Image (cartoon, rainbow, N blue to C red):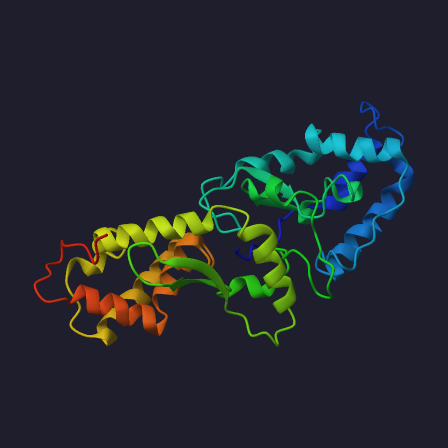
Length: 290
């Protein structure tokens, strides 16, 4: 879950060019609704793509099909769609925090909101969490909705951390929401984590990271090739590693960031320190065995 800058696209000129293109099958069906689409784009930005607020437009089925079709096979005026599909695929998924972006996610699904099928602010690079989420955009309770990486400022901050219980080689692992429950976006964050983040492999990734840490600490935290002399020093090492991972991934909610943030819980840091400094242990020894 990372905040992204809005795409720099002149959407209204793009849709006007498409509507005026007599060589396209959608001509002239889109021309009468260009102003309505423009108004919809303006509203979308005004409410930050809030799924609780935006009401789908009443469009003829043929028009809905043309708009979806132009996303699937973009004409020249919509070449930005191809660019958005292909660029930065190696970066962290802004929706769930995984290692890659495979697709463009229609934050408001094009099946239900075809008016935004080719709107750049509705197209978010994502991984397979796109299909895992399906058509879900909001829950039943007030404030429950998916987060929007272009508009939700809370995504710039740290929202989740791993929680490790029953510490040992295979602890019990869960995700902890870090946002204050009184925050206006708390319901949205918890809904997004439950609906998008936890449906992926984040807990499996965190488990693997923990096992590697226990097997050979410097595999996950390179500074642990030396044994820290105090809990304070261990915290400094973990905080520095977290800052580096955040910088590398250009955000604070990657799966690896959630893992390291969980190590900073007081009880977990204390457990790690006791294992790191166990009598007779060398830097290349495991922290625990079965």
